[in-house]
Image (cartoon, rainbow over all chains, first blue to last red; front, side, top):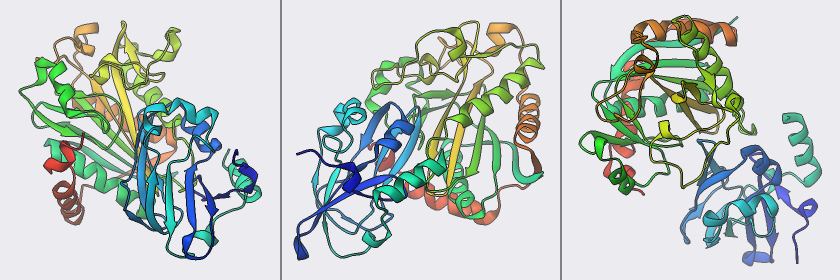
Length: 133
Length: 248
């Protein structure tokens, strides 16, 4: 089933977050918003973290290159990386078409609430994007 | 007029140059003061783009014998020899998107500076040809083409690349003044036009042009001892370490 972008949470740094599960089994799937992908334009490289790595909110977990600009990807949540979309760096052209399903980057098993309460809902994120245009 | 910091033309070694750029990127995120640094390289050096594979050096035999360093910015490899390198550091918001406009802003200034020496350079996008930006591009930056690259007589003479951090963006670029024996297939402005421009003169024009375009008032501030110490720490963990160079 396709992800509904209007139901996702968003970091101010343009990563989207889809939290599933309950209690101490909650997992956040993380990707980059369609707005950011459009802005970045023609991604050519992506670096991903290793499974097992711990991340915290605001920490860099990967990097992308587009039009000779290298930009960091920031973790919006805290926890452990349990899965990485290893096919993605070789098929970055698909990110433009499908940022919310094929475009997932990592899955993080949450270690707490840290970062979650800072995330924006879709309407607030859209507002931020409109203001930055 | 907003005051901004100018670090005047000086020569540096490869690891030193890259580490100072990284240190100033981090510092600009905190101080919020726009900064321009102009420099040359003490010895001919090959810099690899951040995502390039070091093994790809084998595809360019002419530069195999010179030292190499991995940049933090994207794009292709550059033989730094008879050139001017500029680094511009701008404070940005963490929420900000693409800084692509900065390429055209700075390149327009450099095209105008070259005009004063009788050299006409145009952005590649004005030539009506398709751009390339893919992992299959040529190894050397100056054999690739993107929209804002400056072109003289069909040859690229200026290319720039960026690195973003949370609070600032670094854009550095290389202006090819003369050909190098370590990249003989790349003519510089001198060979293409007969104008062999002294590096100090073009550096002066570029800094004045950037100040005017951005509405800045330069305050010359050399790199401080504290900033150099910060750059030395960065060189140990990144640009001077084998792990950094061999990461791909």
